[in-house]
Length: 233
Length: 225
Image 1: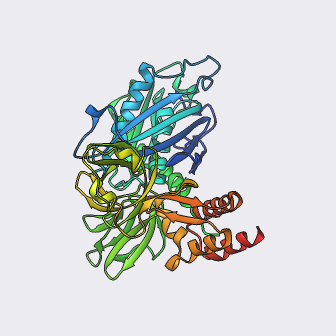
Image 2: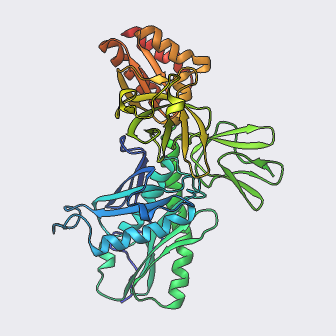
Image 3: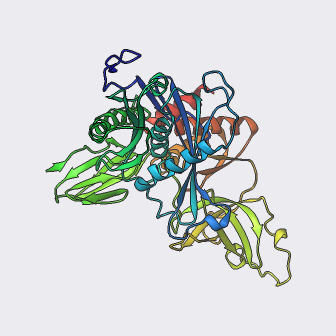
C-alpha cells in the first residue's frame, strides 16, 4: 500500500509549522529558540572564550564545540537519562561538522565557541532543529560566519518522498528512510547528510532536490527571527 | 548591478550586499565571485565605494589605543595578568603600571592585588592576540571600588553617546563616577541609590541600542527618578 496521505494531513513537501526567536537567554552571548512541529530546541552560544584543556587549542584559528542534549522528560514518557550518551555524542559531532564550514574564527586563535543545545520536547528531527537553532544563535552572538546553515529532514515512507518526517512517520511499519540534511544558503553546499533505513537511487536524488526547497523555508524562518530582534520602534 | 541593500539596513551573515565590481568589501564583509556578502549580523554602512558592516552583537576585539577595564587575575615575575573579558588575558608590566621605582624583591600585590579592577590602555596586540596593556596613559588607574557591570562591547558607543553626551547625562543626573571600558565593562561609583539608577539606565541603553532618540528616552527615565 502506497503512502499517499500523511499521518498529520500535511502535503508531501510541507514542513511542520515553524517558529523561531533569537536572544531568548540573556546570560548567553547569543541564543535562539527553534520549534518545528512538536520538536523544540533551545540553543545558547558562549564565546569566543579561552579554551581548556589546552591541547585542544589551535593557534591558527578558534574552534567550535557543540553540546547536544535531550532533556529527561523530552521523549514520549520514558525518562531519558540526562547527560552524555553515544547518540548525543554522535549528534554533537555531526553538528560540529555541519556548522564548521561557515564559521570563520581565524581572528580568534586558541579560543573556543561553545554551543549548547537542549531539547525540552522531541518528535523526530532533533538534530535538524538543533542545527537550525545553533545557526540563529551563532549569528545572534555576532560570530563571523560566511553563511547560515539551515537543516531539515527528508525521507521516504513506503516509496513516497516526504519532507520533515515526524515520529509517527519515522516509526511507520514499512520501508522508511530518514535523511537529515543541512545546507548553506548561498552555495547550497551540503554540510550534513546522514541516513537511516533504505532508499532507492531515484528517490534519494528526488529527496535531495526537495531538501534544497525545504531548507530554504527554514532559512526564511531563521532570517525573520534574527531581524525581528532588532526592529526599530 | 549595484547595491542590493540600503544604508543602515539590518543584514544577517551570508546576505548579499552588492553585485558587480562597483563596490569594495570592507570590514565584516567578503567577496565571492560577483557578489559581496555580509559576515556578521549588523547594520550596513556605505562609505564611498566601500561596504562595511557595523556589528550589532559580537565579541570585543582588542585594538591598540583602546581604554579597557580589566580584572587582575595573576601576578607574574614582572607584572600582572589582567582578564580583559575576552578569550585572551593581557600583561601589565611593572614599568607600565607605575612611575615610582619598584625594587626587584618588592611584593607586587602591595601595589595591585589579585581581584582588583584596573583601567588600562592597550598598547600592543599581536597576531595571536597576546595583549600588552599600560596604566601610564591618561585616565588609567586602579578602579576605586563601586560596582562593575558588563554590557555587550558593541553597545559601548551608545552608552558614551555623541561626544560623551549620554554618559555625561547619566553622570550628572545620578552623581556617579562612571568609567566605561571599550571591552564592555563599566565601573560605577557613587551613592547606592545613584549607582542603581545608573545601572538601570545603562541596561535600558543596552536593550534599545539600535533605536533612535535614545538620549531623550534616558533623560526622561532619569527625570522620573
